[in-house]
Length: 467
Image 1 (cartoon, rainbow, N blue to C red):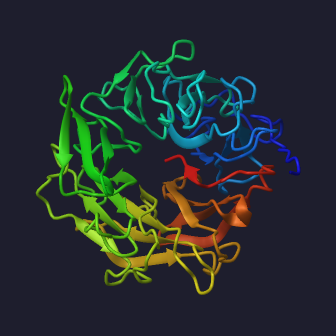
Image 2: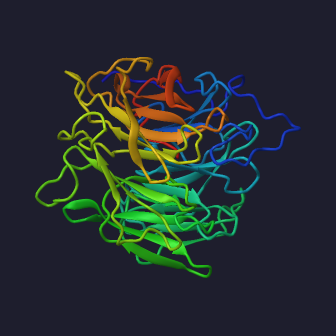
Image 3: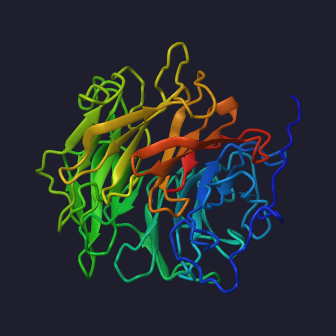
């Protein structure tokens, strides 16, 4: 076999990033790793080869600016980067899950990175989590989160990560999921000591997903855990809300799907839960829709009312482009954010299995807009690599929409769209479209491939983008 090598940029290469001026206070924004007031993009490339270690994994950071992100302002970080705990080993999948938040409250956002297949001693595939600390120079050194000693072999701990303030005390917290163990790490965090405490989340067994956001309007984010049910992955949805003294678990027995996102779609002060149910119905899963669907569960003072009739949208919904076809994967990735600056959260839904002509699994993303009446199909638009102004062209197995994230990287008050294209040129890439008063625009759209960020082998860039 031909030996493959990987040329990696240093964790922060001289000349690639301009530090925040000494006189400027760091912004404190989640996702702004260098504190300059522009949110940044962190994407996983979990199957990147690091030297001889295949699929060891890497994280690519593109720093925001008034003109958007650029491959020229980047960092590529692996477990072999200076200051990062651990060692890059084959199959670690460093970067398989990501979550951003200012854990130590110094004004610079930090990044929690999952290596879901990390081996610990003689236990293979246990998984681990690492915090990379933000600074005026961007993400620099890191610290491993406390590792439970009882994790199962091949338990994939850290496959799901969320960072938010779960108890409303002003300090961000972190939760990691995995087989048999889901844990919560409580803030405040310090660089020397890590979290103030951590423990197993009660009443939970195996779950590999987590969604966080404030659905009750009390300033404390709920933690939503989709559960695997025999014959129906994501067939049970439980969430925890803070009561002021403890966490209380609630169920949404009629909800289904994973992954998800939380945003205030109807601008009533309560976050709304969007669930992607991308799996086609089959004999053991009678619910859902051919080609996939999304559902919206609207928040309230005690969270979503389980008796409500949620909004259901799929590609056969009137006004939605396309048609529901087997294995489209509509809902494989979802994100919420205010694209047009009207104060209502909008929703982006991916269908990475969408066929475009002869191009199999080329992929598409669909944008739906929030309103006082909830999520609407008025003005809905879909985008592919064949859309005028979008870089590249639709090709088989590109998987345009392998991940999506809405975040304002230009600081103009409108969320921009980051699209993962994990199959681009077999190694992956990141596409960006700017938000505007009329919605997404292809003016200034970018396509950034692994070549542009000096990833030369393996990769999977774009399979994960930090929310």
